Length: 122
Image (cartoon, rainbow, N blue to C red):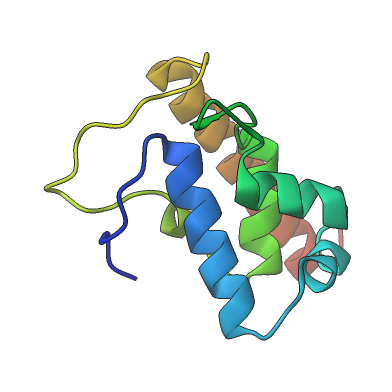
């Protein structure tokens, strides 16, 4: 996926990526929601649309949702994040960059633990 779209926030980028990936699979928002343990069709629509007010996103994607969406789309969470080295400016919601990274690290450890449990039967 290229970074051709202009986005205001990381959530805008992730939402556009998720919507594009969902459409490539010929899934409706309800179909994606069926693959997500904690998200409903309405949640998917709100994530993709961003619940805008005066043109600005008022509904940001949480770290938990990022991991849920990545699992449903069978990719790594970091694949949903911006990765264009020329694009370095994004507006973040109320979470600081350190909180985002800490959340991603904790979630990765959780995924690794889940994978270990599946592989070992524990």
